[in-house]
Length: 237
Image 1: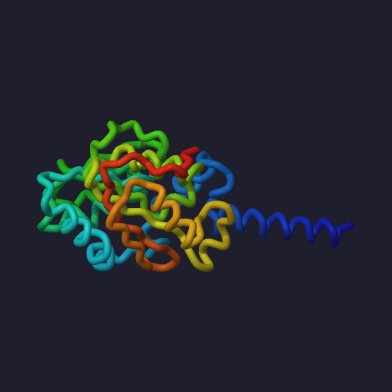
Image 2: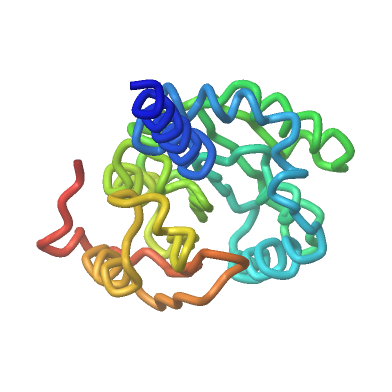
């Protein structure tokens, strides 16, 4: 009996480590995910090892150029964390718009606010505590919408994507990531295969879709919203 009990305790510890550490609570619901992100918020940037130069090169500059012809563009970062996109985008000379950061973790938002304190454009930056679905924002109210490294941790990736599309104006830019490779194996049922991700994008009113390898363990999709309605086959739950 003691040996069986010890094995059960080891199995339980491994299960908890997998779900709470490796999977970051993804299968346990939004409350657990938010609680975990509240816990790690002060260390989040260090844990993710964000490189400002890489972020500026791969996110900030390309998005600024994509929005160059839009006067004072409005950008929404869904599940923004500590505002990595804002920090990469706002310093770009070609960008004269604003960024609205939305996240459910209050502590992540506070840490993001502190991290962006040195930016020269505080009046072009806003923080909103809100879930990814539904978003408390008007339809077609943003020129670009991003959801980076977040879909796998949301209760419904399709519902969140549907909301991103709803608030994005026709012609606007969509940035979306999908976890792939070995990192996706620890999140069964929460990620898309590469083929399924492309099929999902094909069901949306999108054009100029480009999917590229991005950082470690992710694909990044760039696309523009067309004026049409979602094609038959997209189910938003």
